[in-house]
Length: 311
Image 1 (cartoon, rainbow, N blue to C red):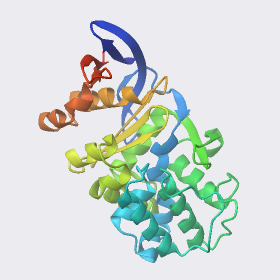
Image 2 (spheres, one colour):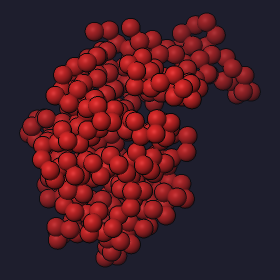
Image 3 (cartoon, rainbow, N blue to C red):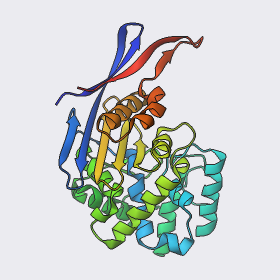
């Protein structure tokens, strides 16, 4: 299958190209469409975050700590450190009543601080020692590994473990399995059991009800969920990873920009969503400035454009 290619024009010349691997699957993992290598292996990075909140929610975390939707959304977020994000993080930390300073907990402005707060809340529910909570052998990270394996369909021993930018384990696997997990997130009744379904349902509801807290102002994740009114759930990961679930349709999408360049994500995912009928024309029109963004020079003159070439 040919790659999707994002081409960067300056004038009439294609100055740069970004090759993209992308796959669309249903809840059974059956391929509906693909470009490039659907089994391209990469790290899931922050696109795994919605699933890393599930163990906390499956254990009754929302009920025990009275978490609001915006707090759960922040736990699944790569937030922009805006004042609203920082306030919600503070609310979470107050609710879970952690003892003093926690070693290796990231600064509040770090985009992963909500995820770390969720991990510590999980540790508190289970009465765990949270020292070294970021290490793969810690029970908290073993729960992360378990839910990732369960939702993606990749055996735990086959998941490639790396170290994420925020210091906790990150999970490497084929794109097809990431897409399968987003099909399950989009339709929680596809989950393996009632507790997992409950956790997926709660994180899906939080992300689509409070999309600002998943990313922030002028961020694609937030824009897609706001513009579609929760018809799609979306999450970006570092190094050019992006995942989308089509809510209540059991469809998952995962892509990887091979060179990791973020500027290729928006044109390819927006145009694929539109072509496949997951964005209607009105929704696409609202996202069009990001679907075919212009290139400007330092004076602000338009000197080119970025365009997705999808065979």
